[in-house]
Length: 476
Image (cartoon, rainbow, N blue to C red; front, side, top):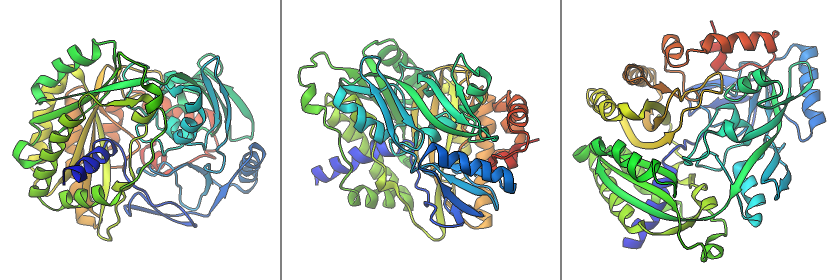
């Protein structure tokens, strides 16, 4: 039985951080975002070459069609769809163009996944500087949502992009970088596909290396000081995550942390370099299902997870494998319910005051079925127009189980808006790729450059060739 729990928890600890399963599009009726946002689209077109993608754009200009851009379609807020629009499926445009071992760079087409890149660079002993903790997403999609991950030393994802090429609404291909077409560069990063099609990207890499796992448990009040002392101020600490309890017996009181530090002895590294694969999905899927049902399931799940973190303390793992979190066990199919994500960013020095306020909102809504809260660190980064990290932040990713009926959607919306108000009062912000529960006022408060973003959209795409429901919902 102990072995079963180890397998279960190994998968759950990492997979619960950011993943929610979305139905993949296979026809013109796009039922996306876990049945909360069904959209009828005109057609799907895929381009396997630069020429084919350019022709899709030129044809749309002639016919007046609106284009939306899709990768793995895990964004929940309508960023990849538009009613009666043409969806451009980028997944076939997925080649790793070049790995430059000397310069430590990789150039890839935007439909490539982070897994594709890892498989290409692992033989060279190289690793991504920053990526999402799940490696199933496309590069173009991650750049378009300005994603972040577990790394605490290499800034944000935008900091690792040396250059990219963009296919705009006129069919022209533009070179973008921090020094070339800079304004458009930082609008496209976190621009949700509204400025054109990202064709290919050159990313900075770093060395793959062997990490030692360090775990700890503590009350939430002690976490900021622990993070600063044991993680942020420790140059050997390279990656980090934490989870706060959602179990009733210790609800938002207890925490555990997992930190990956450079191992003093790198000699065993070759024994850990092989990329891991995902397997044994059934066991964690079953126990996660139990935790959705009642408080007892949540309590037992949390107690087992905290015990597991003690067992993995001192384990060795490669950097590339830390960045390959499991996710399949979280696929969820229920005709009356679905699961959504929310992500809130709060300044590090506000964390101790923020948690009780967030806890009060959840406790005041007993039907709100919160399944998980994963915490990561996001350093200050205001380069992108729609930047969420106005200062050094802790990111809290909430996994929520909810009904799909009108009443349930309204109830979730009310709670989400209240949680966002609490976040904003503590100087925080929220992440934009998720379902459109926030108000326009909350968007403008969390993202003070929203007006600039919409002005840039009108300037660079005046005919609004590239559109999605997120833009339609929140534009002036």
